[in-house]
Length: 140
Image 1 (spheres, rainbow, N blue to C red):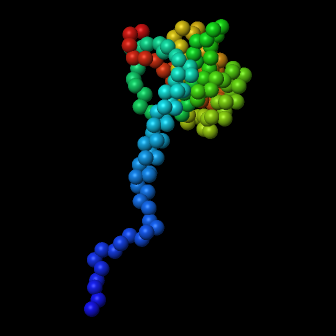
Image 2 (image 1 turned 90 degrees about the vertical axis):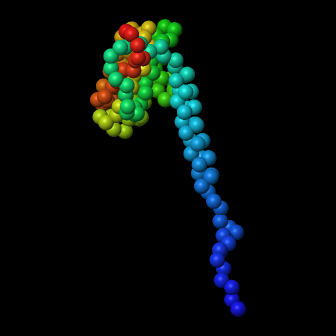
């Protein structure tokens, strides 16, 4: 007499990778958040306040921070300080399609426009069409 097997046992060589994928996704999200926070600490910027405008719902392609430094300004892109001479090359390398790029400029409120103008000009030379100035919500 033959017995039918109702439940087949899983082969011994199979591994369920679903929990592993879940853990990896959590780690990726964690490192993305920590990386963003670390990049913001490299160049602390005291943003100007504005009572007008809307919150941006699109993710920027590139964020450029211009922080006040002793004797001038520091330009930081992706957590790396960039000199004014390197700015054009770095922008062209980072922006594959500059006309479609959305660039956010975070500039310290204490800086004069003359220190921010070279960054804006470098973006224009790189072909950036959409450059947005980042402010904090509040009274001007």
